[in-house]
Structures are given as C-alpha cells and as structure tokens.
Length: 244
Image 1: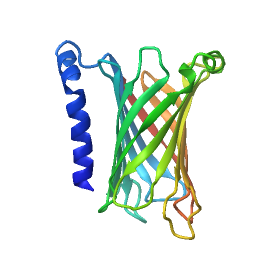
Image 2: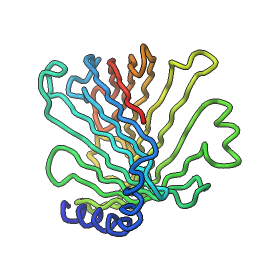
Image 3: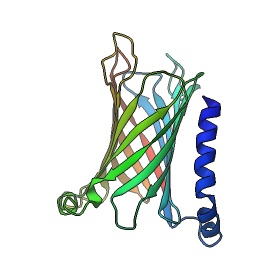
Image 4: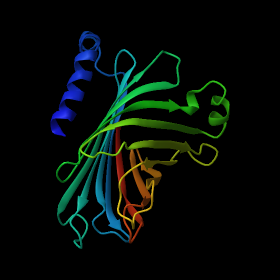
C-alpha cells in the first residue's frame, strides 16, 4: 500500500508542481487556520481521541489544502495519560473554475497499524456556493459540502467508496461567539464483520462557544458505528484557533 500511496501523491505533485511553484514565489497562502482541540473529558470511550489538529490553507491557482490529525488514548487509561493511536487525513483540492462549486479532490488517509493506509480520489460539491441554493444557505448561516471519495486505493479487494458530509453553522441572531460544526463519513461496500452494520457511519458534531479572543469551550458528540459497544461518546474540552 505504501508504494501505491506514494506513487499516487507523487503523480499529483508532479502534475501540479509548475503552477504551484511559480505562484509560491509570490504568495504561499491567501488565508487559512490552525485549529487545536484538547478533550480532557470523555464520557464513555476512554480510548477515543483526546487531541485533534485541523489545518487549512488557500493556495494559488484555485488549490486548497485541509488536514486533520487525531491522537487517541490507550484503552482504560485516563485522558492524556498516554497515547497509542493516530489517524490523519491529508486533502488537496482544486476548484475547477473560479465560480464553480465543484472541487477535484485527493485524500491521503493514514492511521495506526499495518496495511491500512488509503488513497482516495473524487470530487467535492459545495452546496452553499451553488447558485440556486446559495440564498437558502446564506439565510440560515450554513455552509455544507459533500465530498464523494469515488475511488479508494488500498490493500483490500472490495471497491470501497465514501460520502463525506461537512457543515458549519453560525448563529448571528443570538451571538457571534457560538458555532455548530461537524462531519459525517458514510462508507459503502466494505467487507465487514457481521456485527458491524452495513454502510457504517462515523460522525462528530461540535458546539463551540468563544470565551476570549480565539479561545473556545467545546462540546463534541461522536458516533462510531464500527464500534459495537459504546457507539456514542461525548467529549468536552477547549479549542484554540490561529487564523491568517
């Protein structure tokens, strides 16, 4: 898998290199953020994620980058006592035209363990940037996109694909300090044990309240249908954002 994954990213990099390199000499990024999340309290699953780092950047020539990295606890250990697992998604996206709500996407998906890395190819539809839908989403202060990971290259024989829903909502009629954001990953055609439901979903919904500057208190509800016990979990913590 590592050779497949490396070859795929190398091919994409070589394809994009001339335009990105020339533009990077003038400006590397026109905007982005670092988003640090710490979760000192987990309600039901003690080996769930206790730290998440999100990174985003707008790049030249209609490219953009987004990544998330999760760090998890050892089973039956207190939060932050030790870590044992990691999970990361590295996304490169290309907006097909200046006004189109469609991005071509490539995702490198890596985690703890052996022979389980993945390369995903597909496209993202930004519904809130779609002309006939934009007024509705603007009226309710909601951004919403679906990433269709249509092709997955990995070490399994099944033709697995995924729909990744991402949303963020503001509440200006209440306060500019509050937000609701999250994702739902819905995966299809996996070869799974009988006790796992077909086409399982993984979801996280985070409610954040800005306390001071870019420092937030957060509550995060998590759903993981790959787990057969404690499918739900609640994480409480703090978040700090660095924007540019």
